[in-house]
Each structure stands twice: as structure tokens, then as C-alpha cells.
Length: 361
Image 1 (tube, rainbow, N blue to C red):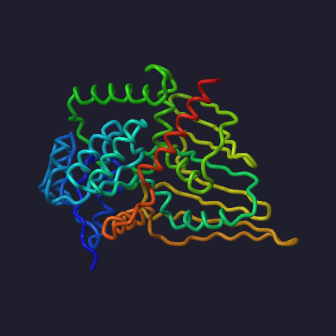
Image 2 (cartoon, rainbow, N blue to C red; image 1 turned 90 degrees about the vertical axis):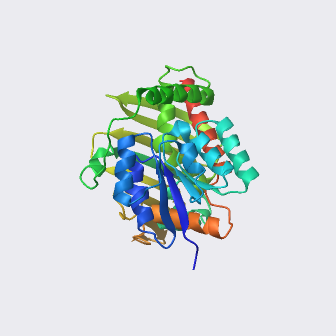
């Protein structure tokens, strides 16, 4: 029987409440929720009561040193990911970091150094890359003789469209003002370091979009197609606070259209579609905030005069569960996880490429 890993969770917001806590609770043969941490006293108490956890911390460093914890899930605000991951590694804990792993190359290198020095596993939470449909699609894409074109799209409505009707989440508005101010200062400084652009520029908001929603899509693009040679053009617009971004990536013999944005419609359209000479492959994702909505694989193919199209749903198992099974296997069998801190640095390269292209407009 595989060992059950004790998990400590830092950050108890929506993603923890809607996804990570329920998924972990549904995997008792793999994980046990051992400790919780949040800077909101009300939220910490509520989640402790709901899941029957009495090891509760307001200080992340204390959770990372808890002897009962085997692996730390870093789910708090992006600006604190690095210090939490390093503290966990220094206490010989394995780490899952929700995307984005971090905001700068300096932070990425520090996480990698701590991981290697302490001999622990650190995995970035790119759950879309664990979807069964995507895993199958990658094999099909790599077998194509030639790619003509590809499209990566993530156009969605606000998360509230999906969360409010289907999940119960709580928040208490009791985070100290000093911590809110610290988060703002950290964000501004880290984004300025990452982009080379002074705080106050609209491109700081674009960087937030890239490391947030777009990081999923760019990571999927990277695994399926590799790194682009450059950017042909990029355009960012914003209407009533809702962002849209379009980028054309240059892959030498073909281009990739990347489209992302948030609007006022209650739908979720996230997909990767790759066009070959006589075949196309498409992975379609649905919102992760409603668990077990399947991602699908559509393959179109022409042989002679006949065009066929097949739509496959490999499994109802959600990508988060598949991701955590992979994490458990990586830790218990001493294997390198699929989404490492080292390869995350390529996403930082892509973020900077896009910012530089927009800055030239």
C-alpha cells in the first residue's frame, strides 16, 4: 500500500475551498489534510472546523516547520509563493505551488536552489497539462508530419458565474490592512523587476493577466509545441476593467494565435487546436471550478474524399485529481514531477516576450 502523505495548506481562498480541499478529502488513500494556514482568522477557524483540523497557523513559516506535515501546498497570494516554498524546502517538505510559481527569475532560481539543496520535490500546479485529453493530444500532435497553424484560446466569464451557483465559499474581510499594503508593495516591486517597467504602467496589469489566467495556456502551448522563436505582434485592450490580449507567436514554419480575455458572459472557452496537413487535434477545457466537467479531445481527419471527426472523453476524472496522483507518485517513488520549477522559467521567458512586444507598440 502506498504511504499516505500529510498535507499542510497555506492559503484558504476560493481555489482551496472549491478545489484543493475537496479533492484532497476525496483521496484518503493518498493524502491526509494535516494542517491549515491563512492570514484571515475567521477563514482559518471556519476551514479548520469544516475539515476537522486542529493544527491551525496564521504564520506560514510555522506550518512549514510542523513535523506532522510531509508536503506543503502553497495556495496563497502570488507575491508570497517564493518565501513559503523556500521555507517548506528548508524544512525538508515537498511542495506543490499553484500557478504562477513566482513572478521573477530571481525568485525561480531561489526556489530551484532550495529544492536541490534539500533534496525535495517541487511541482507547479498546472493541472490542465494532466488532463487525459491533453496527454493524448500531445502524442497525436507530435506524430504530425507538419503543423500548418495552431490556436490557443482562453476566453471566459468572471469566476463568479461558475462558483456562486455551484459552491459555497466563505470570506470574512478580517485581513489586517498592514498585510494588504505589504501585498501591494510586493506586487509592484516584483512586477517592476520582471518587466523592467515602472509601477503605474498599464503593463503591470497585463503582467498580472499573464501570470494568472494566461500561464495555464502558455504552459500547455509550450508542452505541445515547444518554445516559439519570437512574436509577430501583440495587442492588449481593456473595456470597463475587463482585459483582452491577442498575440501571434512565430514558430518558424507556422504561427500560433493566442487569444485570452475576460468578459461578462457566463461561459468558459479554453482550448488548444493544432492544424496539420490532413489532420487537426483540439483539446477543449471547461471551468475547473465545477469539478468533473470533462475535457474533450476532437480529432478531424481527411483520407481521400472522406472527412471524419471524432470526439473523445478519455475519463471523467478531473485534472486536479490526476495532477495530485502524479504528485503522490513523484514523491513516494522518487520521480521528477512533470511540471518542475526549472521548466517554469520558460513561462517567465514567454511573459517577458509578450510584455516587450506590447511595450514596442
